[in-house]
Amino acid sequence: MKSENNHRVQGMWMLLLRTTGCERRREVWFIVNGVAIRYGLREHSLISGLFCHNYPLGYKKLGGTKFVDRHFKRLEDVKKKLVKMGPHNDRLKMAVLFFLASVVCAQTKVGHKANHVLEVFQREVDDLDLCKFFPWGRFSYDYMLKEISHTMKHFGGVVKENTLWPLSGFYVPLELLAFEAIPKLGLAFREPVEEADVNCPRMCKFSFKRNRMTGVSLSAINKELSNTTLGTYGRTKVRLDREL
Image (tube, rainbow, N blue to C red; front, side, top):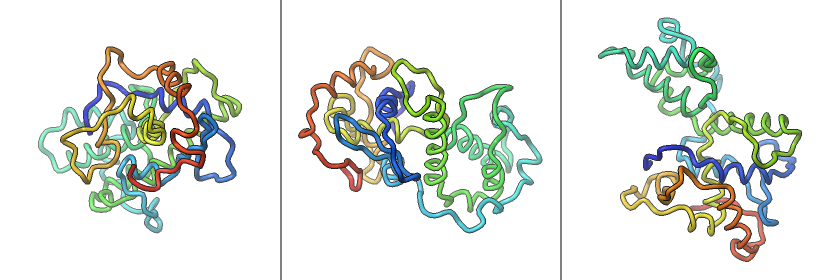
């Protein structure tokens, strides 16, 4: 994936401002210019490329805690140990655990306020073979659903503009969803990565166009949307059921 200096979250907030009610508890829907856009496990998988198959039976009890018991509990402890650790049998486990805790389920609190590392991470990393094939895509998606639900409840079901609210989790797929589902936004703000492998997930095949700003402003996105008619991307519900 092409390196970016910072997240471009305004596309995600544009969608959250347009969240609509849904009876399906495992999906989130947004209404943009009268068109329904779905954020479901399929979209999360297509954009991220992470494994999203079913959880192994009894996964919460798989693995062990020997590795974690030797070292730490909090995310900040993981980071400090990883930086200081030289060649050691536990170094790879330390790096994997740091990736899981800071990317797959990224937290908003750092330093001494950092949350404890999730127990499932502590257990899974004890067995790297198990960890390698674990459905982290499904896990990160389930985590995001909880975060979105928490956010909507916090704002009484309606997220307003100019809102500042930290969102935990692996939200890159949601960050890119608007640019994937609405072709005009994708053409305006994203461009192909020439060196990307054909087997790369969607998030690695495109990057944000360079500009003088640190990101894409919400006003710029809304301006593009104001010039977008329903006919531009259809009057039916938008799903990323296939490669676009």
